[in-house]
Length: 231
Image 1 (cartoon, rainbow, N blue to C red):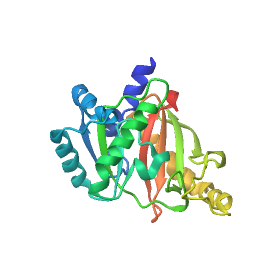
Image 2 (image 1 turned 135 degrees about the horizontal axis):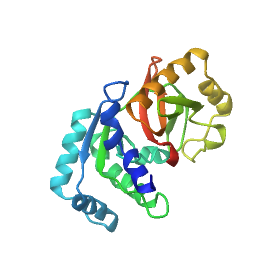
Image 3 (image 1 turned 135 degrees about the vertical axis):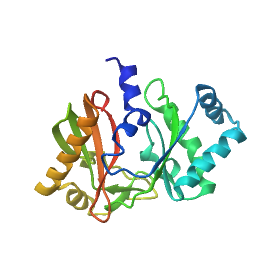
């Protein structure tokens, strides 16, 4: 399978409909975007405004979720630029955040990252201990690699060397200990996540990386996935 096909299958438009009825996921609303409208939206980077017709569709889709919401495309969220991209606190912030998200896609990789839909998601209150990356809560998250229904391994999503601070959100002095507490996995947790990873793999054959996050009530949610060859 070539890279183009792997990227197509990594799109939420491909994998989300196949798994949404089998695992707990945030409420999700898609706004598919034609190639023509995609180019029109991306013209904001040249100083133009999003056409009113498209802006109206964006606002209506967001209202189906309510605020705050988690914003992304079918391919990514730019979460390392949290307060400017994926975390949308209110209606007034939505369009500026979409502009920032589009810019993030243009800068991703050598040729940028193409996307086919804007995605509006329920904002989950995750178990978190501190913030990094422009205010992003560092949470209890796990990445599972699964191949044809068999879970190969489970990792904490946030290793220590992946954490960076910014000027407005300096890391707390004890952040390493807090991160260790988030990353520690009990046998019960490993069993639960393995079970969910197996369900995902049974619904989507092939090699996948699958991301789960734990909310403040201790419930685990499927939040993202991509072909394992690209992760």
